[in-house]
Each structure stands twice: as C-alpha cells, then as structure tokens.
Length: 288
Image 1 (cartoon, rainbow, N blue to C red):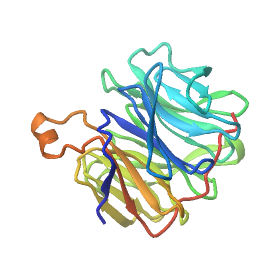
Image 2: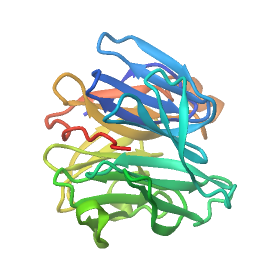
Image 3: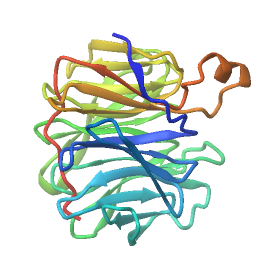
Image 4: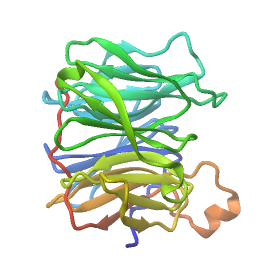
C-alpha cells in the first residue's frame, strides 16, 4: 500500500495525530511551530496557535483536551484558548521535553520525555492518573515513543527510538501492577526507527518508522502483517479514523532534510493517509 498526501501542511515537526470521534475530526501538532491542526470531515483544515511547543494532544471525557507542552501537562479548552497546568515535568532536567503519549485503559495518560539536547538516556516514562498522581514507570530513556495499548487494556507498548526495540508491559487495573514481558519486535523489524503508534481493532500494532519512509503493522506474535510506503522519509505518528475507522493517517516532518531533498519531495511535513482493512480500536477518553 502507498499513502498519499491528504494535507500539504509542510509541518516542521508534525506529530501527535489523534482521531477524535467526539467531532469526527483529526487533530495533530506541529511541535516546532507551536500549532495544533484540525482536519474536519469536509476536508477543511484549521490551525490553532499555542503559547509554547506541544508534542501531544488527547481527548477528554469533559470538553477539551489534555495537551503535552514541553515542560508540563495541561488541560485545554476546545478552542485552545485557555490552559490549566496539571503537572510540571522534569524541571530539574532542562534538556528534556515531553514527547509521545496515549490515553490508558483507566482514563489516565501515559507519556514519555525526550532528551532533545544531548540525546542521552536521561528521560523517563510516566503515568498521570485521573487522581492527579504522577508516577514514573521507566527510567534511562532517550526518546520516548510508540506508546499504545492493546484493545483489552492489559498490554502497554513502548519504544525508545534510538534503541529500536518495541517493548511490552503487562498492566493490571489502574496500574496496580506493571511488569515487562517479552518484546513485540526487534529494531530491525522494518526500515527506520520506531516513532508514534496505534493499535487496531484486531490488536495489531501500527508503527510510524521515522527515517524509514514506511508504516508497519505488527501482529501480537511479532510478525509483520502489513506495510504502507510513503514518498517522504520521516513519518512520525499514526492514527486510525474516518467515517468507518479504516483511514490510516500519518504525520511527517521537514527537519533533518537537505534543501535538495525538500525540493524533490516538497510535501515532506504533510499529513498522509491510506485506506486499510481493519478499523481502529474504540477511542479512549482522558478522565483527568
């Protein structure tokens, strides 16, 4: 399969795409340009300026969103005009920022950080519970990515991008127990390195392969069950949505491209999409 450019938005660092069934819209961020984008069912695209960089946006049960700014997690109203801080993240580590995230099966948010200055394993993986409790789940991470959950809510997927292994953790109710089990896939499962991810209705894990020009679908047994090619080298995140949940979207980036590359593939940084056979799992909403 080959994805085509749906929105030629030329994001500097497109990321964090999510399908929001509340309004049947796709949302995503351009981290470096401090913007949120919304793609409506009629194809209209709207941009929302932000006060600072944001790596993720997640839907709440209440109106609005949870948003991952560089150094804090906050709630945002539906128009992205007002923000309320929920937790300040790693104030002692100015080289890190918040990165990938997903709503967990119990209404909390699991997110990770990213050492964007030194690319050293100083970052961590966290859970922000609906109660407001912030818990560190894993340490010694460089770039947190690939966070997603199995449809039955018992498995958390995670990847440290430079390491490349897609790890799995078993979770009990409300994270009462959290333990690592066998990995889903080795670093060489597909070209590139693991970035954002989503799990479909059948429990297969779709992963954006940054620098690998593809999206790969991995079955729970670790075998590749699908692959989508892109004309750009930097897919960053994936979402499943559309009228029947079978539209696979991917954000991309323009950083780390030469002028020659951008001239050859000017739609780098665009939003890409392709039709797939299996729809996404039901949407989870933050209870925060």
